Image 1 (cartoon, rainbow, N blue to C red):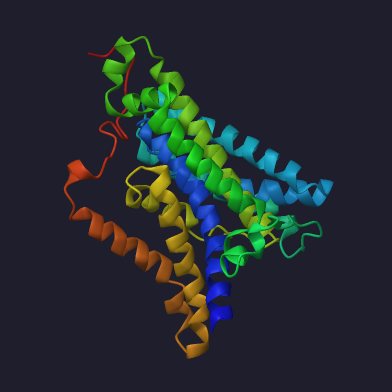
Image 2: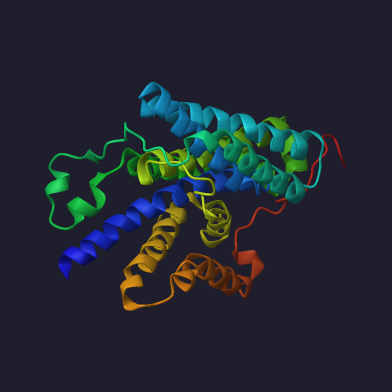
Length: 306
């Protein structure tokens, strides 16, 4: 029984890692006032690029770097449309998702079913991994796991404790007042969109070269949409996102544990998305003033506008 619990929690950490990476990036992006619904497409691009580069070069870290670069590059399209052209951010984000899914499917078609010979090895931390139970759960994981937690904590520190973080939050709350202080609002928004794109691509890279070690079309399986919901669930706080992401990672794992009980696999596959809807429904009853949502989230801003 103890071994099953440890194994379940260990797998929950693995399943929650891409959710934490994508959610952290979306939090940073939305705190600047930009709503990015293109997370799913950017994750798919990161996954396919990381897989192709890793298989071609035999270097998984080079695959990760290329994936992050591509994720940031494709996110520029959304940034330009939403910031420079002041277009509808919902439409632009949805277009980015469709573009990313389409291009990744085309790029990855020759690689479907091919196993990845070079894998991202787990990183076992000395001494800490010997701690009973917790050692195996927390200190013998993929490098992506540690990176996800470090980046979430770094994002929290950036947003809450630094001058740049104040400027990012001010841009999302009141860009007019921020502009009067001589702060380049558009530049900050661009920066946050690029950071969000890099994090989403990193999440996709985890799926293809660490989590499943293969490429199949649609392997993101809606995780990008769940990350957007988790951004709300975490109240736009990267620190809260850590617990939220691994909670949903546990929900992903539970569906596999329940299969031997004879429950329909189709029903079990719905569990993460049903949980997402329940969370959003619960949040909808809360006082909007307590949600901590950026006041200008999704609203276009023209420089010099009064």
